[in-house]
Image 1 (tube, rainbow, N blue to C red):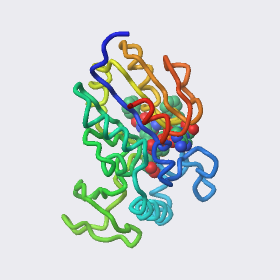
Image 2: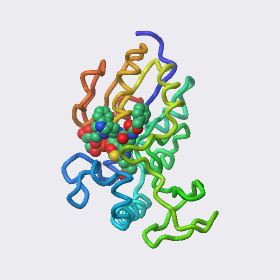
Image 3: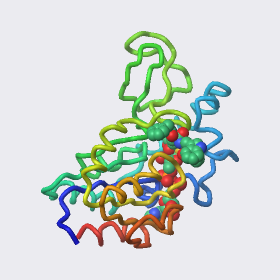
Image 4: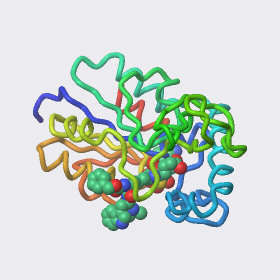
Length: 228
Ligand code: BJW
């Protein structure tokens, strides 16, 4: 196998599951009888902003009570000790990678603890509720929304992600179902460009056949075992 210098790690909800944060598509992962595909959209927000705000207020409050698990900690150790380039691309909107100690983390689907003012385009650190429509501290308008990427919206920092995929010697996907694009396509992109590809997941993902290797088990076990 060629020497591995540049690593891209893609994480999904499975990496935070053992911290007590619900995944989207596992049993119990549905929210209020809706599929996430039907509610995490700009159209759903336009139709019923109260419902969507309640959903995100609840989750924003909940993540602040959770703590990183062994998988987050292992990735932080890798981040601290890896001499080559390493980029953790997370689809998760929680901050458990950062609180676990990782430094090179890119949130392609946004962050729970940010609000976005659609009137003045400010991004603000935000820990409280949005349901009561607080004014934007910058422009005063009541146009704050969760700074997360819904279906039909462009994920963040795609140029940086594709640049890292082009350079990657190893692409590792952890705890994601492979149901949502463009993240689900990263493995094929990385592989086509010559990277080794490894999947760490509780069960095989939808794109499992695209990986050179798959290791199954809970993230708190398979991630430290891979890192160490
Ligand atoms: C464990 C575990 C344990 C459990 N240990 N593992 C047709 C074809 C292709 C694309 C499309 C299409 N129709 C529409 C699209 C585009 C659409 C899309 O992908 N739709 C699909 C439904 C088909 N995508 C978009 O709209 C995206 N934008 C876009 O494409 O823009 C245009 C563009 C084009 C080209 C390039 C670039 C851009 C935007 C997608 C936004 C997704 N947003 C959400 C919500 C974010 C905010 C929030 O959190 O509420 O992101 S939806 C939700 O799904 C969330 C997640 O990040 C994302 C992925 O979910 P994830 O993380 O994989 O979770 P699960 O629950 O699905 O899986 C958990 C996994 O963990 C499972 O495998 C378990 O086994 C495992 N697990 N416990 C290890 N203990």
